[in-house]
Length: 70
Image (cartoon, rainbow, N blue to C red; front, side, top):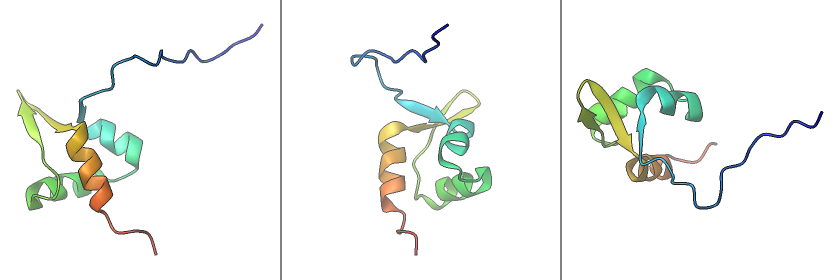
């Protein structure tokens, strides 16, 4: 039996916003660090009801602004 992970088509839409928990899971950063960056204004966030969302473009800008590892 040949099991393959399905790959999305090239035209599949990219996510436009992420919840804090998704960023924690994908980046390995801590939840507290993410909320501290939001509070300090280094990471832009929006609210949708009770959810805190980070737009993909703002996450990319934040990650690009981090210093390189020594």
